[in-house]
Length: 379
Length: 92
Image 1: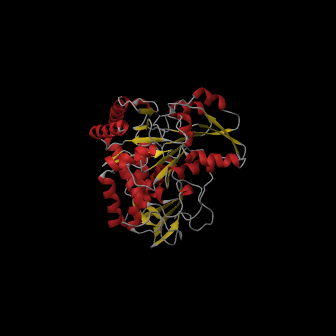
Image 2: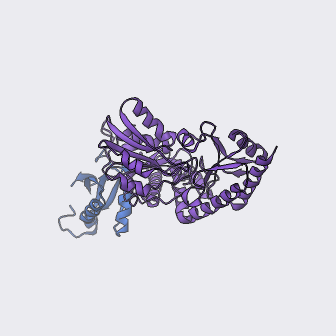
Image 3: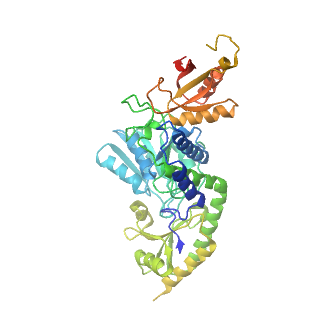
């Protein structure tokens, strides 16, 4: 079995991630921040350490500014729905995921916001001049996908952070967190949404949002936090303001361990390994006549995610044969991102997405190329 | 009691409790205070202080000023400081 669907969910996970979750359930099992007993305190410490590890990875100066959510979509909803008010203008590139586009489109159709969509090249590069020109007096948010979930293109978030200036800058790091260096200070990121189950090697159902000091989001959920329990007023301090109800403690424990795995391997080493895999895959695909490759086709400009099509074959058929005949897991279709497929010219049929991760090897790349050659040349 | 200059060991070791906003700040406070060499404990918030279900930081009352200063430097809000006297906590 070869797993090339890491942009969806990374697999396998580092053994220590699974061990930490098992250990939590065998030895602690309790909820943090509620009861005052020693197991509750132990759970609280594990959640605290996960928050600190994430803050270290993203260079967040005060870890309470990083709140846990269910996933990146949940974090993006908190950022978008919590920030925007009637009359606000938003700028976003043409390649955003539905987790950004659906909340924005909802607000647009309700007549609450005005939206400018900035064009991108076929390779997925944002037209930065057009982005600059789109800024208006009432621009209240610039929302950018750090790395495309379809073609892997990495956005120049540092440059956009400079362009955005005082305008809140939201980065969707679902595909980049753990795979590409992120520094919220150096890059001028005001809101960073991430998921735990991709390149941070945590479990599904985890994620978070960094909220820069001075940015006030309306909380989308109110309720019990274990703090200020004598009052019916929801707390106004972080992280409790955006974290109510019992958290996903085993998930956060696993996520913390996944982040420490990334920190111990080193983000640059992970990136080097994934760039080598991407280079081999791109070179091999270039040698197969009937295959079209989308995106930058340059390991320096993308994550280890490559979209392709095989001439004369539907993406769904290629994906099916890769799975059934060769036991290679990929994802075909539109990848929750019609905007990108329109931009790269593959709407509505989509592509076959080959997405690698830290645990993939050069041997696997070779086997995938062989399988694709077989499918492409079959009568 | 204990602050009146009587040097008996028990009295110089008078214990104080700092109530913070949330468990995150209790664990954060414990970590940064321990780093400075202070002896810090984490205890359930005593019932006479609050009906809240949280935890509090516990330390020697003679370290009170340092504790407050270090927490303030890290932007940790202290809701209240209490001293344990005759088995009862009272607000300072």
